[in-house]
Length: 88
Image 1 (cartoon, rainbow, N blue to C red):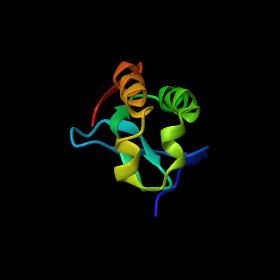
Image 2 (tube, one colour; image 1 turned 120 degrees about the vertical axis):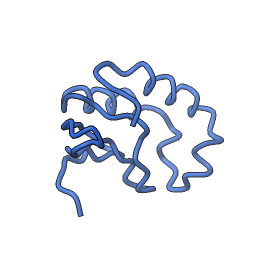
Image 3 (spheres, helix red, strand yellow; image 1 turned 135 degrees about the vertical axis):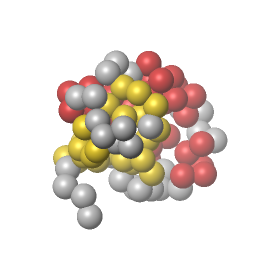
Image 4 (cartoon, rainbow, N blue to C red; image 1 turned 90 degrees about the vertical axis):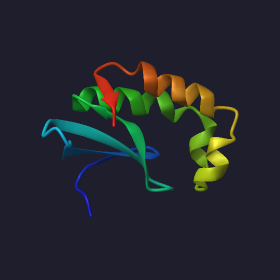
């Protein structure tokens, strides 16, 4: 169990990365899948979830179906371009 904040379809929690840096992690709550970015600030993580909220690919609880949704490419671009983030 993690302690964090719920932001729509996502949860945000702080963790210690492998390099011992404090990072914020975003998890899709319906699937339990962690998004493949780490955020350097809580504000950056929250801003990213707000951009992702409007995409319909997150409405599915099936991770495999989400990968085939037309919005998935846009979601991936939003994640890659997210400020104050790095690859997880």
